[in-house]
Image (cartoon, rainbow over all chains, first blue to last red):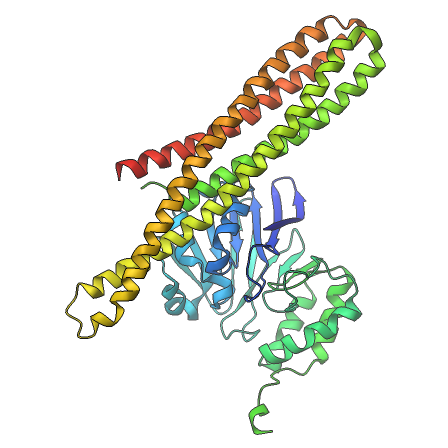
Length: 248
Length: 201
């Protein structure tokens, strides 16, 4: 499992995990993120069951299990959180932060020791060590109950499926050329994202944040001016492409 | 409750990763020591010879740590599979023991699951034993490291004007060796604790 430090300022750190060479090519490649501040840590979208063992090994290289007491699931998909039953065995006193509407569904992955902290539809803030994280609503992008994570101090938005591509393990960590990258994003966003009003509302809310790094759950990360370039492109993109496709 | 084997193996892998990073630092120290010894000339011939050993030691520790690290990661994966298979087996076995009308239709699957679990448990046992052996092997490197640190101190004492600088390097070697030893000890503790728990279970 490849680990990339995205941000480091004293004991405040963002680490991205992904591109695991041992994972089968038949499953979707995913990015996982660990945020540390002080002696606290949270793992964002821990990944699927198939990824659990390399993820745990990779995470423990940076943080002892007793400091990892928080998990976050942006939504309910298996590539996001189907490893829950295993994290449930690995971590003591852990809390999972996940959308309120998915609680009864996510529990199907198995959790007997972990506490479920339901994130209300309007979002919430979380203090982690010396920083404050915001769980930003991103409903219908793509899941009906969906959150992103905003770290104002680091300027990083973990943007779930938004800004992602399905490029597989060969994808570079950072987008090298946005103009060449955008076409790779098109189908994923058009097919997975269903709601135009939700999209516009999300763009309006995140445009003013001052995002330095946009970190999606799939594919390469965007930074600096690429973020604004993506937002302007996304604003114009027609989404919900499957509607009516069976009638044609 | 003891930690599941997959957590123990991942923990060992993490400790060995740290040891590997320290060993890389040791290799760098050896290069610095060599450069200094060359500048110091004839008075540090002994120290210069030692730097070869330090580099070789660092290289050995790095490769040994990499082997253990990779093995521990693979073992963690096997342990996850064993845990998942065990969960499935327990459920299938419960159905086979019930009065379900068609329970016979899952008996072959239960049997296959049981066999797979036995195989994975055997693989785990063998893997854990191998890890113990490899960690024991690593201890030999630590003994060598301590000998080198002691020799470095002795050689530094006779290095005239360079004494102070070589002393710093010698101290650095000992401190790094101690930290590597600490990671190996912690890995052994994790493994032995898990081994005892499994034997008493």
